[in-house]
Image (cartoon, rainbow, N blue to C red):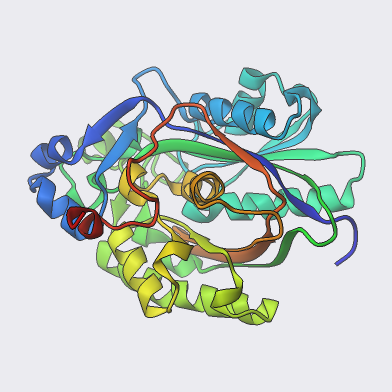
Length: 356
């Protein structure tokens, strides 16, 4: 690898203020609140307002990330948005975010890799910054407005997916800090296992697709569960091997948040200490491309990440897509624009809370 080292300089998160509880979701999904919490671990999820789009949520997070990094939005030279729920098919949602934030000097583009999107976008920004010294700062924001695309009666998706945004400012850091050992992958043969079928060029929106609810998220939960069970351990072990590390050498593991119950089980099977596996899906649900950066911000705020701490990042999502990276922390701050902090520790399970 050549060029300067690139790391995280600041983080910002945003959750819309409206909260949907398990009791509310359960009524429409035909299940009980207890069923949701026991099967998924999700306790609540935030929902965008009728007039809010993905770019509105992302703009809040980008502004907070710039503030945390102590830069002005006009200093941003590259703005990469990761989302699978864009404002519209075109233009890019990143251009909408640019206009909302006033980041007038930024090159703006989207990356589409579903729940893996933030890490894919971070790799794009990382390499762009290393190869373009005239650009000092990039912002990578993951955002989803899944509530616009969920069928409230589909218990397999309505109980999990939610809305939110998380942004990171990337820039030069000391030689002992920053990102290393990116590894990304895709398998398009599984693309139809979780998707929004209608609204694109293959199945344009029509009265028929609206009636069929083809504009909503469709997911084969069993296949996706098996995929996560297979790929997550591989991501962890491969990343540790590439870095020459043991799991005890990392301060925390930050992963996509598909299902807190599943994530905790897999973490335990891998021998990851409970306090080192960051779990935030219980308080926000699955917020797609925003899940991993939101968890990283939570680790910085609540788990007390210190400069030079090692973070193992693992993502997986529709496509199918997956990836990992090692990040040596630079001491960046994280700012939440709308507080949704849980009253319990980020890595504590619902069952553990019940015993307190």
